[in-house]
Length: 202
Image (cartoon, rainbow, N blue to C red; front, side, top):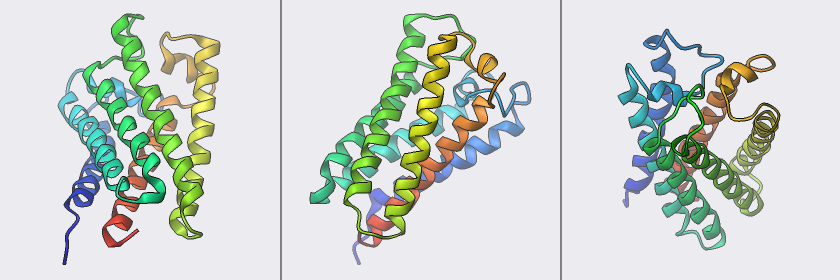
């Protein structure tokens, strides 16, 4: 039996990200789970675990994109997923906290996050239009809708409040960090599900 090692690596990488994202909050009690975004945890004590999780998240998205390239009808989605993974690499290479002053370094960090979000959602949009009517199509469509709503909501806050201490400003209305982490949890869960489906025959 042929084993799709790429899918296995993507699944393990996404599982590590989820476990690491949850576990780090037991060690970084100086940060608020609800209001601090995950990038803050990549700076300071225990940052190596989150940096590794970002690396594996990028790897899982690129690997899944490569896997999708083998599916004729949805190849374009694979390219966008690869670009999304590259966006995560940019976030990893240019770490920044929301409270940091605006610098070219921080702008590159935000740009990586925007690239990841837009490319990932574009990939989901393409896939949602090409999957047959099954649970995978339903899950993909639900995450697409939730992801777009989260992106629009955060974009509006950026437009209103600017690029200062985002967590502090947004926390007046919503738990920014918690909202972001829910999105990352769903995204990595989706990688696990689609990688498994590719493994058993999409």
